[in-house]
Length: 228
Image (cartoon, rainbow, N blue to C red; front, side, top):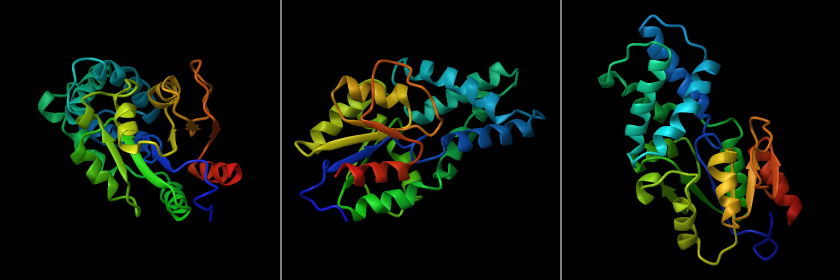
């Protein structure tokens, strides 16, 4: 175990969906199931390609609760596939969120970090009640929780990080996330140390550079052990 005095950081926050939770498996599965009911056979890759194009546009408009974001995105994605999805039928996507699975390495890594004395947190583009459903997947608790509902804003805007700094205070803080666009870039812009959980083996898309990167949360744990 890394001692309190020798640790480089006191608090580690995470993006949730894409970093801790396999949201692409959850979203892809929800869309494929709903589309099959309408007689359509959609592939996960094509669903996610369109989803990643649509969601940032919806989030960048006037603030809406994430449940409404998901409904609107579901409707727009369906339109792109000529799927006549009625607005009243878009609830399938937010209703599926509670079943989106964690990555296989997530819970063990969180346990390891907690055992090493780190405080843990989540900064997420989500509603409080939806996050509460997701937290049931984890065997650890979180000291810091900042949601889009609380700050009425979506990353990559800075409100999550500003609120987290208020909560964390002078404690040494590391943010860890998969999304370069939503997390790595805004964290770097605010001089917040950031670790890139590069699960998708991507190249940087901007000027920001994380302190380090790995493909899994196990890599984060090992990096922290080696950095202390």
